[in-house]
Length: 69
Image 1 (cartoon, rainbow, N blue to C red):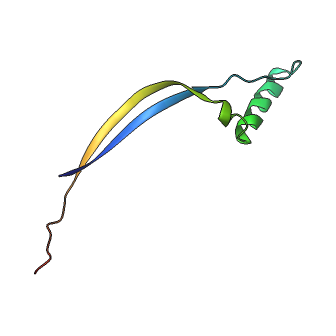
Image 2 (cartoon, rainbow, N blue to C red):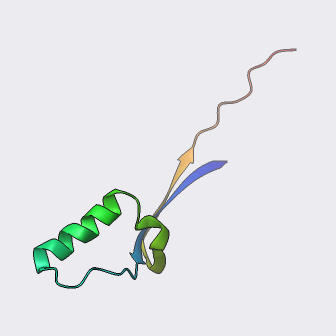
Image 3 (cartoon, rainbow, N blue to C red):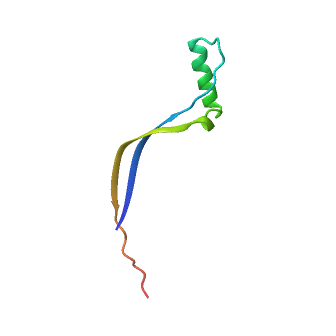
C-alpha cells in the first residue's frame, strides 16, 4: 500500500537587522520590504518557531502488475 502524507506547518522566521537612524515609520517599513524583496534579508532569517497546522494522508491505489510472460 502506498500512502501520500501531507504535512502543513507555519514557519516563523526572525531577522535582526540594522536600520539607519532618523527614518520615519513609513521609511522603516519600506527599508525592510526592500531588503526582503532583494533577498538581502533571507540570509539573516533564522527559524524562530514552527507551528504544526495539519497532517493528512491519502491512500494511492496501486495497479496490479499486468505483464504476461
